Each structure stands twice: as structure tokens, then as C-alpha cells.
Amino acid sequence: MLHGMPPSWLYGFDAHAHWPRFDAHDHWRRARTMEKTMHKALRLQERAIEAARQQVARAQEPPWRALNEYEAEITLRLPALADDSLAARVSEDGRSLTVTGSVDSCACQDAVVAEIQFPYGHSLSAEDIELSLQDGGLLTVKALRKKPSLGVKIVKASPPPEKPPARDAQAEEMALESKFKIAVASVVEQASVVEKMKTAADVDVDEGGAREPEAADEKKTADEPPEDEAVPPPSGSGKASAATMPEEGVAVQDGEA
Image (cartoon, rainbow, N blue to C red; front, side, top):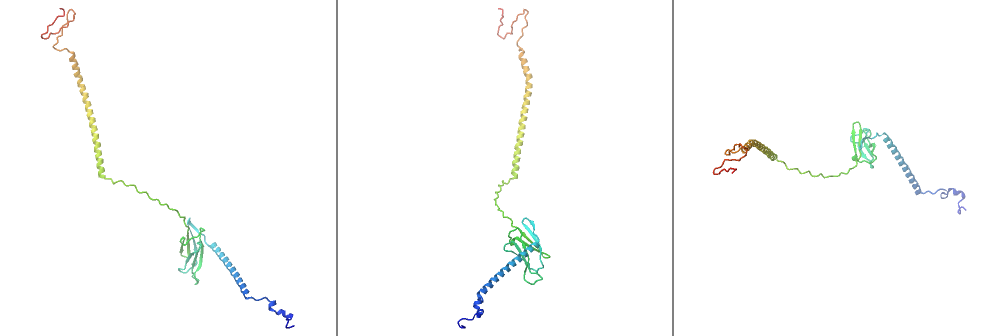
């Protein structure tokens, strides 16, 4: 009996029958899963803390001041930093600026002293940022907005007009003098012609006045009989007779034969 089956009270001490089987591989698998879960929860917690810190920093950050349509600046005060330890870096997405430096009171490595979010809502490059540090730890950051590019149309200038040949002042003066002399000569000639015409008219008038007495004398002479003709005396009987003085060799015949 003892050799065939163990007594019933021994079943309680049977590790394989009453206790769960111990597996080392399963133990490490469960431990690894728990570790991953804790690590994930820790990362989520770190992200939440960083988001809260950025939100507080943005709330405390002074606002950007617009200089014009394409420029804006912001001024903030930094803690006391070691000389030549200030540095700035644009984030990979181009939307923020991280300022680092070595604090005088801490001998540790460079720490983040400011993180600034850019305005305009789009990414910027390092060429679009200007930094200037003033006395007292005042840092001024100027952001330059990219201006839209404009197309440039190249227009070729038209060739200049041809210049007239240079004028010779002496030749022009001589030409003008010649024209003036010709004009003066023409005026003098016209005046001479007019004077001649006037003189001729005056002569004609004088000759006409002198010819009128001569014409009257000629008419009077024509009306008077010639001296060698005899005027017969009037007859007593009242008969008209035509008696003329006979010429030499011509006999006078009486009308009453």
C-alpha cells in the first residue's frame, strides 16, 4: 500500500499538483511588459510637464511689437550670463528660437534661458532673424517677414535719336548776313523803281500843262486867214461876190459875162 500509492495526506505536499508551475521565461516577459508601460507613462508625463511649461512661458513672454508690415521685434530680459556664452538656435520647424547660455551662478553646462515663438504663423530661417544684446541683459529679437517676390520685366531702352550735325556759327552768320544784304538790296531797288515811276508821272503832268497853250495858239492860228489873202470889201448892192487876188499869170474872169 505504501509502495502502490502515497497516503492521502501527502497530496498537500505535492508541488506539481497543488502549486502553479514556475516558468522563468514568463516571468521576464511580464516584467518587460510592465517596464514598457511605466516608461510610456513617464514619457507622457514629461510631455505634459513640457507643454505646461511652454504655456506658462508664452503667458509670461512679452508680446511682439509690429514695426511695419514685414518686421516685428520683441525684447526680453535674460539672467546674468557668462561672457561669450550666449547662443541662439532656430528650431527644426522654423517656428521658435531657443536661447542658451551659461549662468554665472551655475558652473554647469549651457542651459536654455529663453524660448521664443515666432510671429506670422509660418516658419522662418536664420537669415530672417536679427539679435542684439544691450546692457543689463536686454535681448532684442527682430523677425523679418519674407516679402513676396515680384516678376521683373526687362524693357530695352530705345536708341537715342540721332544728333543733328554741329552747326558752324561763322557760316550761319555769313549766310544770315548775305540774306540781309539781299533783302536790303531788294527794298532799295523797289524804292528806286517807285521813285522813277513817280518822277515820270510828274513829268507827264508838266508836259500836259505846257501843251495846252500851244494847242490853243495853233487853233487860233488856224482860224485866222493867211496874210497874203485879201478880204474883199462889202459891196453896196448887197450881192455877194467872191473875189480873190489873182495869182501871177492867172486872169480874173467876171462872173457876169
